[in-house]
Image (cartoon, rainbow, N blue to C red; front, side, top):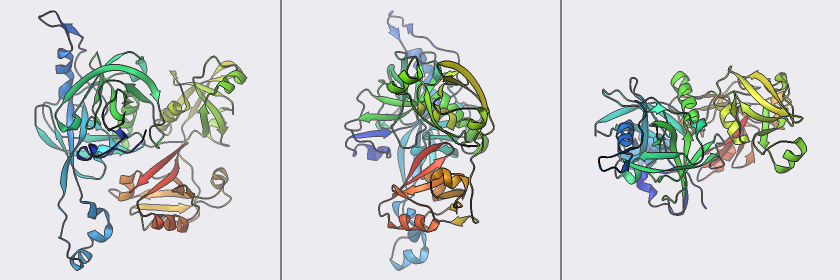
Length: 464
């Protein structure tokens, strides 16, 4: 199976085997609808469908021409010298779907990859009204974006509790597959807590067999109460189509992302100071655990909030704020959405017995030697080199670069870089100085993968 990043809808049919990331998210709606019998006495979901579909919208974008991504082609003297037209024609492309989650303020949740690199975003409602959308903010780590429109008479979905889902629960998937118009499919929750589908690491997907196809990105996954419990985000298929395995971002995660984006314009990830791993069968035997659920603490950073709270190597985190933790990926995702300064309660297993530990999420720490310097080959990114011998350098077992600032509306911001990120490698080659970083960027012909640390977590940003 081949795993690839999603493209816009008019490119979907050209992709051979693929995992295609799609789009969506969550919030308020009317009273729950139930499956009923129609006048013929046959069971029907029509009342539920009529209730929820007005909150699901089509998202289309206007993108810049490929030449405009290169700064040389934006230089008017360069364009005249080579006889290029003054401006490349922009093209509108059907990108996917979205979910209205706040009718009063006009907030819409969708996927980051749907609106990435968009110069203009347009929304089409079920009643065919069209409105331009404002981008409130994005979070590439969870592939979530928040849009806003100003329009009367909007309908919004009520957010459900995705943590209460069980394998076997019935769900509906709503979106705009292949650009043919709003479509509703049904199925069940076929698995929970799926991860390992992308490089970002903030994953805790709901898996469903409700048919999800290209163009469903950002659409709604709804339970039989009419509540939004997930944003349709990814599919696995040998030819880019549905084969009964689709994935959605849980509503709990999407809500947390949205709240931070609305408040800060971005997700501010903090630091606990632990490295974690899944519980293996060997660890289960040695630690006398009842199951393989939970996240095993593999390392505790000195002087971190985790160390100060008394967490130890070998502790198993079984719950976060009284919510069960199934895996290291789930704990990573939930910690990654906890705002800096928030107090958390960890339920752990130590020496075969349960314990409870409280601590706070701290802001990321970095140590830098000089004032921030601009990265010439990545406009909008300013970095500082980590001081040799500093605690941060010792933790990294070498140097690296701290992102000091990212300019608004810059290429670096659109790619996913955020202040506080620690850059450690480019295309799997370690970087310790700005000169090394620039050299590796310049040597990359078809794009590059930047490996970095954000809070407690590792992720990779792909720049093409």
